Amino acid sequence: MDYARIVTDSTADVPAEIAEELQISVVPAYVQFGERSYRDGIELSREAFFDRLPDMEEIPTTAVPPVDEWVDTYRDLVGKAERVIAITLSATLSGMHDVAQVAAREVPELDIQVVDSRQVTMGHGLQVIAAAEAARDGKDGDDILRMLSDMRSRVHVFALLDTLSYVRRGGRVGWAQAMVAQILNIKPILEVIEGAVDNIGRVRTRKQGLEKLIEIVQSHTPLERLSVIHTVAPEAEHLRERLAELTAPDRIISTVVNTVIGAHVGPKGLGVALVTAR
Image 1 (cartoon, rainbow, N blue to C red):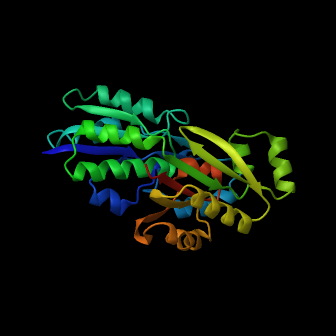
Image 2: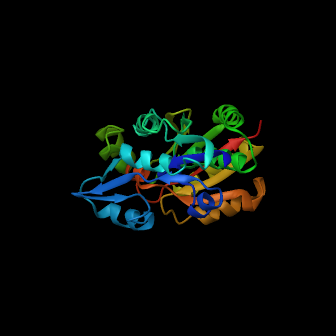
Image 3: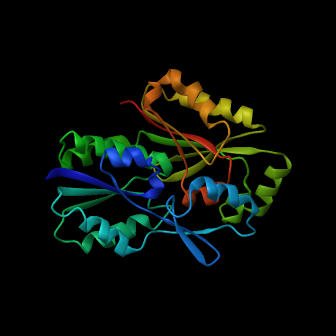
């Protein structure tokens, strides 16, 4: 039996091969087109989702996994670990954390600790991976929780949006603000830290945005972890190559953002998630 095992939801964007290698249990979120629901990344690939998104008149709706799916995931770990640590999407942005906690109370035979990542996409996922690596290396639950507490304030996500139209359709910004940005071809740069989303800059071109992202990452060195995140952006691999000089190239994880966040970001979004060194 392991000391600890890690559970998360699919919005963490942990690549499937890493989840399998580190024995991370992933509960998929849902996205709905009209009357049909799909499990994120399973019944509808993320690439297919972003390909279809521009032609949709209404923004797709998203939903957290139902309690019973979390319960089933937890129960599958009974007898496999002394403790389970479930790390969720930021509680300020979603009900995922609450549902994971409700489900934990349904499995009293298992010691389950639910942790709010206070992050999105790989800002969340890098915490999950670090926790799973610690579990693999034989760290107990208390050690992993202390590590996550120390790590959380050092996690940042920065994203360049191609347009504000999807954010506007999701009710996150006003119509007038989005229209002005569209007319002026302004592309916002957002930061997520400790569950808060801030607009930290604006650029006129994607090339300027790419350079700004590189500049931001450079300003946060030295780095402990780094990931390139995108919503099928053509510059994703180029950004990864440009950032390789800042850390070991094989330590940079590149991944397509989940449908829950992607529905509000839209196609061609590009960003980075990073953890600064202590």
